[in-house]
Length: 254
Image (cartoon, rainbow, N blue to C red; front, side, top):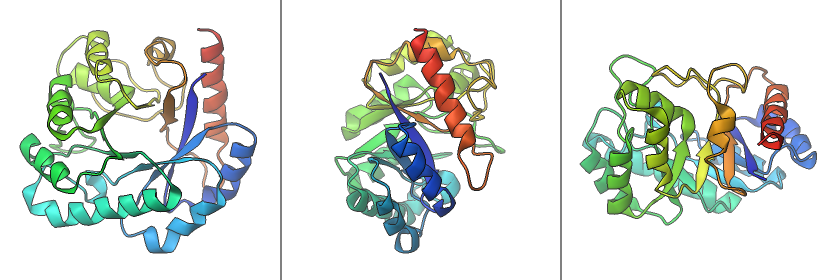
């Protein structure tokens, strides 16, 4: 059986009571917490109310952390260190980072190596961002391999990102994914989406055309799978509960 993760933001105090309840009811096995910049002092300790294990997700470029841009190094370092603090407090041994956008892969590697922490994990990205003229570093197996070999980091495989990147680069999807699998992912991200699309959409299971059962077949038993689909409600996690039930049904049919 897989270990299922609930994705929340560090500022999501609105979901804490519901998250506690769902953990007690065995809907998920860990929380993947996105460390919103400058939120540690106000919000970090509220998460100690949960007994679930934590994985930390560092801010991405949309929140101001972009390893691929030299001029952003000081900001990147600040936000990375804040993510380390979240991990320290919540006893997480995994901190996921994105490689960067519209910059140079060599700069990404330089910055990672300058602040490197053994808990850091790099995640693959779609090539095209959901915005004008956004092009991500780490969208191909070749780029991820280069980053892994020069930093020694572990790897997070995001299936949706891989599908979108394969389509954008006009490469066959399943062989593209299998190349990423060669890097022995530590953790996986899985949502639904447009199997022929180039933009990531974070849909709930069953709302898109991803071959979810096929994708699950690539994940070894016991591995961590974070659900990153969008939240529809401001104070409850019913959509996440439905995703978990959908996922468990697929798993039972494997």
